[in-house]
Image 1 (tube, rainbow, N blue to C red):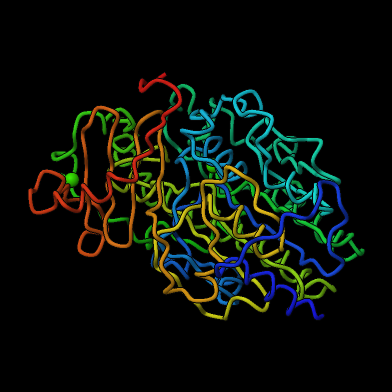
Image 2 (cartoon, protein in one colour):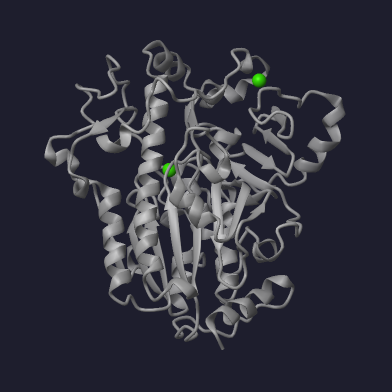
Length: 473
Ligand SMILES: [Ca+2]
Ligand SMILES: [Ca+2]
């Protein structure tokens, strides 16, 4: 059986057939099992050419990659914060099931022993697990699951280029806010070989060039476009602050927000950035770091396309959450608005997906675990709260019945379907946006009786069980 046919046959399970569970843990993988290349972007707004998210963005490599298969234009993270988002995707469970809501929560102490992560699930079925860069958050790596791993830390600080030095902010702000040393941007002249993403890709390319054992599940976890927004000078100079497009804002936008929405808005950041005439510089710097990530993905794809694995490897690309750069007068993440919840997400599966396919339905990052298991013919572990997207990969119009759910701390959820974006806070306060006419989410229509049925429909999906108390830590 050809590998492409194998993948196609495996995908039949998602079309309604039962999934085999006959494979025992630690069994050898099927000899023709497809590989998985997982590109995991860090802190990325939807500023990709394929997403139409910013008019000045330059992402030719990611656009080309996405064009090989299916792009999900309405995908959302499980939580708009690094650790809870990564934990939810990697365990296949929502934050209200893991109890992991914060970056300092060690998921290994929160979830029960019967929770099998996606990497472990693939390893237990004979896959060769490789990571380069960040998959789990911080120090909470499942270290024993990797056959090979490489952290690929940045060493440009050692070369005298320290963007973290609070005494000398690169961005020209006359101070750095306490605890916000990351909130910085500028060009670096450090050798590129000292930069984390360059090193991480080099590690993977060496493996691809030298017969990495198949089947593999290989992760490239980027460090950019996370703050600080530094990029090589040649990259930064491609984006002229004087010419970049600023995101649209509405000065009265906050007037219709319920009180809990303000729990997550830093009132100083937007005022400070704009007041210091840094907004354009920051937009340019962020576009530059996205472009730099795109270059690194291009380097990885060049090695991949010239390897022996190109025809039997499934590629998944996703960001861990979105990012605000002034939209809604907010900076960074940790809101339930679209800038924080929406992520680029794409799956390319030889024999299953078709080039240039776009799916507009609301889907979740939690769907990747069951989707990749399905595509690779693995049994579906119990307890996964996402859904396989193989039906949508075959036919992008196939209905995904549930909306996407994103959770920010205990009891606060966004529930998103094809048209509407509902935010329901633990206090019972709500926001509702009609994305068809209000993509900037300026007009909160939750109080309009005309939308009571829309809200009631979305409220059915609010998780009943919420671990943890509904207070801010
Ligand atoms: Ca992140
Ligand atoms: Ca508003």
